[in-house]
Length: 159
Image (cartoon, rainbow, N blue to C red):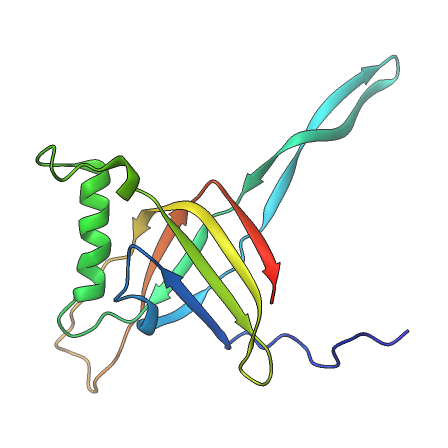
């Protein structure tokens, strides 16, 4: 039996959209489909303990790398989101509905058409890499920033 597609996955053809971060989408340079681990439940018997299929999933983090724009708009969007979660300065800043956002990762085929869509439900940033300035660099260099998100779970849809 021949596979329906004769083309391997192209890992540099994707799109990411985060409703809460409109300035990050264009600048996204890396993203991942996180791994996961099924929980196991130990079952004791007279000869030892055997693992059995459990009833939960541990989701690994979703990572997104982006290039900061020269005005740091995309970077400060993430900063503002983190501050709204961790250190609201007023009740006006704190909106529980605005603390999480779905993230959509679209995988493109060899013709640049979306074929799969992964949705990370109720995501929020948990770590953001630093931006390092360096006047000793001999040439202009563009360095991506990585941001890691936690989320409830991910789903997928074939397009």
